[in-house]
Length: 275
Length: 290
Image (tube, helix red, strand yellow):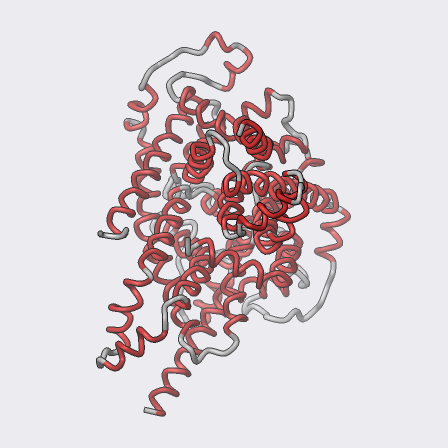
């Protein structure tokens, strides 16, 4: 029995570690390869650690190509979308969970139903709309269609339903106005849900690809994924060192955010499935 | 009472306005567009647009590319969704089996591709799968095997994308399933053991039934995502070779690019219906039976 347990344990660890190698290995390899000269990246048999360390790939990225600008665009767009979703989704989530008003149920169903609508249904009319508003190739055009995400409403409403009504009633009895109650009492209690929603929204806007690819038509509006995608099919397509360094720049901020906040994040993810 | 409802709508208004303009309006516009012959060139001259009824929809099913794209998408879903569920459940069970240390590290590691930009992943994988310089074929060569041209051959391109999609996505459901597994009371397993149930029987008779709502959630969410397959072929194969990785969403995107807005909208509604139908079917098959 003892040895059987030990064998089971060892085989389990072996499988898990092999899985981890398959999942994390490519990222590790990418990070290391971005410090190699082009010839070494293509060498057969491949090297794991760089023989010659070089920052040339990154230097090119930030001097020859305009990656600082793309980086700034990505940050700006993701921050605006995240801030908007945190505010608008918690406002509506609160109204749906705690306030009585006509049309409440219908509104919730319509917003929830939107979760099933494929992106491609929205894509064409959103593009026509944004173009007609004169917002093509502008930051507003990149941000506006993502400010009201149905998922955030669902998340915030679920969380806000767990806040006891007595708390809100008591504040009303004390004469606090509705907006004051929301910003002073309710919102601070929502910190865990806001953290989850904030991280999720930030990551999905940072990684968003199709919309900025279509809306951003000049280089000064490109976000990082758009720039990287266009370079990887353009004239730099065989310049693997440069592309891998670009991929590192795209992945690194997300990785840092994720590693710092992963506890919050994974807990939030886990609860979305338990409803 | 009047004041109450005013307050309610006051809170709801900012989101609802944005939602109406940028989400609800486009959904309806798409539906209307799908019944017209709207093309990109008509945008400046709306009176040239004709109402064509269901023409776009009947044309779709005679469109070889759309049929091909539907078949590819179907294969991707039918193979990819179960594979994704099985891998996620296996990883979650392994991490849940008491003896594991470093659980948090494994969890974070397996989750990493989920939070990573598909464009960055494509750069990595296109290189790893490159027939000349790629790591995978080079490793196979060291073992004396000549690997296939993964993304360049009609027989391996779609399977490669399926594997890549599962590689990229399984971490999400793993986290969800792990939480579900941890929610199953231990005393149920103890009772089953006392009755002499083997590991496998415990899994079949305790774990699976109690995890059913979570599995249903996983199946529905994964299907909705996989039916919309777009980014993987877009960045890895551009739909090729010979349209063997062209998906429905990709076809819609191409039609949009050609300026066939009405036609693209019709195809997007077919996809929408497919998503709703599959979700309903899954709720029927996997949902509570009582």
